Length: 450
Image 1: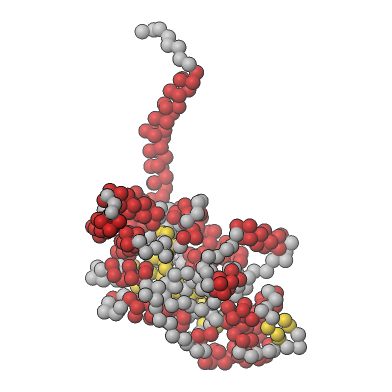
Image 2 (image 1 turned 90 degrees about the vertical axis):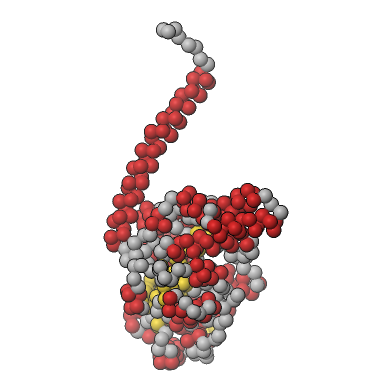
């Protein structure tokens, strides 16, 4: 019994490694998970005391549990059976395909990542790049009850939209965004999922994928999760609001149980004095391709240039960025209407509150024939009189100063030359910004896409 055993060094090291792993998995990791879970629960409890709309249990559920609930949903399992029959697959193979879709879609929300990192980063980035303004806030929003599901419906001007709305809605709730394929890149994808966003394949026509996505959106809606969607389906290539696509709106409206919980859509309109991707979007509009060829080297070069300008104190923020929250729309009030009708009303309400910022104002005035500062100021007065619903942002409440701000931005970007009269030198760029507000003078029709 008291004898000794001789072991090779490598075997002793392997036994020691297994012992450490066993100790960690049975004692250390559970304790750490318990500690982190307790901290997260205390954080959520404090947040729910100050948020207008507390974080719903569905959003806080374990990701694994949500995936299991989703793939065993009766509608999904029926879709699995049909998919297997159509494609000639075994049902277990089709089921694993559905599991993969669910794992891709379902986020892993972290209140710590969202409120302690995401909100602060969004606030810093928004203020670092723009002078941020809340252009309009409809008072009816204050009357939206806590027992409803709120869905923010937004026009899509820039990838900054996510950042800006996250920052400005920080006191209301945690938003769950529908994010396109561009974000499915590691490690960005992990960060975005921890912020509660879910990925969608906008161009996928796979019925099984569509069913898994639809049921997730409907479960989140039934669970009261505050969501944010872009019905245009992509960034505006010409500055105008595009006709809405029916996909996500169909999922929300078709799966809503209005007898249990109403769904309230909140129109959100965004505008910028400078859209960071404007030239990329314009080029895509000309080519007809939505494959934005923004190389990482180009993005890094742009960021380094702005950093150098900041270090040398020659950096100017990119003008104003503004958000308007329009009149909410209760789905219960339109339960007999089609999704097309709902989309039409929402897009109209978005257009009604798009902020009129200095660059767009000056661009539209120049496109309408103005050649001097005084003529642009007179045009601004006519626009305000002709379109009283337009939320015209005048810095310092001064029309002349607003004209100077807009012109300075356009002159710096070499879109306008300043001489005895103002001369347009980059008409496409002016078109892009003028298009965002031209509907206030002549409202074009916009039929929803099927």
